[in-house]
Length: 384
Length: 147
Image (cartoon, rainbow over all chains, first blue to last red; front, side, top):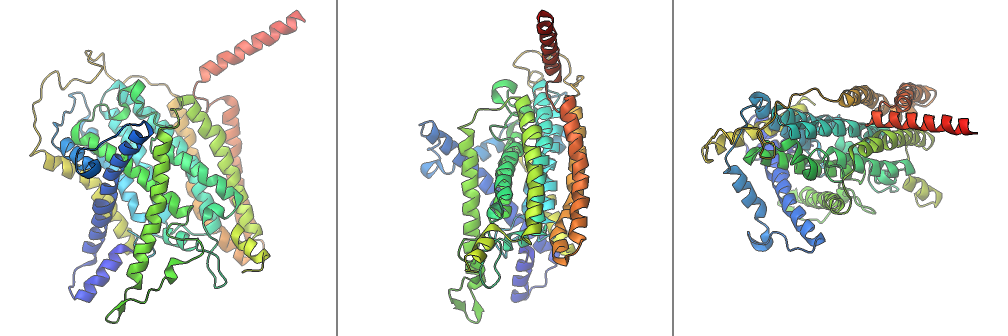
């Protein structure tokens, strides 16, 4: 059930007859403006704090308690900065590029299953939709870079385009292996299947432990996603030490802010997808949260769905937070790759490995009729 | 399903309309003092030298072509492999058909990848590699001569 349907259910209860369009827009507003953008902002603060910890500095600590409101101050500052557009810039494309980047990174949040009941759009091609929109980002980066008529930008944008398009292939192949073992592209279905195996049905548990090939595929997905988000060690499009600021050199004030926000939203998006398709989304080991029953009621209405949703979102967001922390950790651990090393890693290692993993996962599915390692183990031990 | 597609569309439209909206609202708050020097392209403080629209290394072009082929293939494989589980449940030779269809397709592409690998089309610095090979060849012929 999508968020818009849930909201329109409330509408029926309250007896107001508003058209469905309003609720789908409202669900988009809730997820984009109240989740993706604030979390993207907070991620900038968290990143600076973590960076400070790694380098034994204090980090932002002036605005608000512990510097927590730093991201709001940054946002206000960028909002009030002068917007300079160089006179040689291709103005139409220059204005249009941030929209593409935002549409790619924030629009894909529609397919993220936050809980069994909260999902922006429960598409039957959910994962495909998220991947397709994700590739808009590279287009926006390239257009923004090209249109600003700056040599640094052009170099950064070209690198970005080459990098993002290359890493999309291992990314696509790993996602394809998930689709192969699950037999569905709906995000809701993908997560539901990853329940803890039990005597009364259940699922095959998290895809990462479905079979050995999927275990390797998770790491390939993670590396490719890092490159897709232009994060260190793959931050060649920005490469401050060689390309000034890379593809966004000519972007000032709020335009730069939008690019930065889109980048962080992209990191969150890929962490969300990784935890949904590999780490079981809102599924916990040993217990299916859909069976959670605390017996609270208001009148005749059971509060269980609400409590379950809160628990599921907590589990899901905890997994996402761990992945985002690892991304930030890597930034202060690994040095930047050289551009030819980057291409070699993708074309000569990740693509062949993910290709063989895809075949392996397909054969595993065929031989064991879609059962995961945990299910087989349980059957061997006679528990299932 | 139409409703869900509508939901997804509202996400994309909202996300795409946010930047112009934010920039439009900001117009009433931010200063605007354009100046000849300020509006020139940034080139480390020097006067910009020519345009950035120059002839560019066609490495990027080759990578884009190889990518296009692979991405189309991944996109086409999604629906085929999604039905694999269902085909296994049907039993008989259906699963074999789906499997061989998908992986014959993928196999041809993989042979293509190996070909590109061998010809050096996916090496970023092809010239340097060629030079290295020439050097190695010379070295080999020299050592052969000395023996």
